[in-house]
Image (cartoon, rainbow, N blue to C red):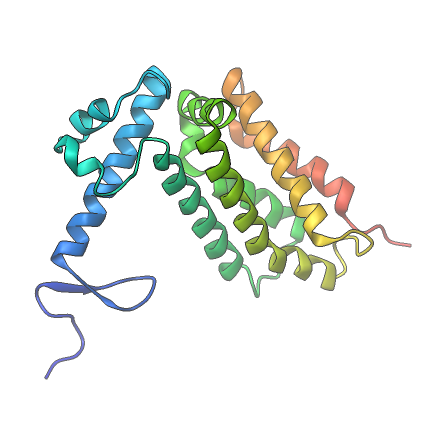
Length: 217
């Protein structure tokens, strides 16, 4: 038997290596379509003005289908932030044995986390405004940001072991400061995107780096 390829109705999951059947692939495609449609509408109309029916119409699925995937529109943000945490985990895994200077890794991390959302100031603005104005969204994002901090512990601890990051600061405090600087930069840019976000992220990462780098004695 040829084991070099999955059966015709299955494919290997790239993350776990487990086979995924056609139904699971279809469910993933619908879920992603709902998320994309919701974020586009949030950017156009704002979070409060967007209804579940608006989202399902944009995604071209039945209204009842939405609730097979999400308990409410605020849970769209849970999916987004969970995706960000997974991106952070992938970034840490990819850079585990990297020889790249930590200041460059810091900048690449910021760009990697923001991703394609950096192309849409209204989308970023709507996400952040929803977090500020909706308790459910705020709770979801706070929980996921904490998971993100846990995922970054390894990266910043590595910087301390390599002698590039100050060892007189606890890694969790450094990571919290980085998150605050990143979110603040993204929010301010979304209000007045007069420059490329990548340039603002470079400035932000340079400032953070100047505060956490280990000085030579």
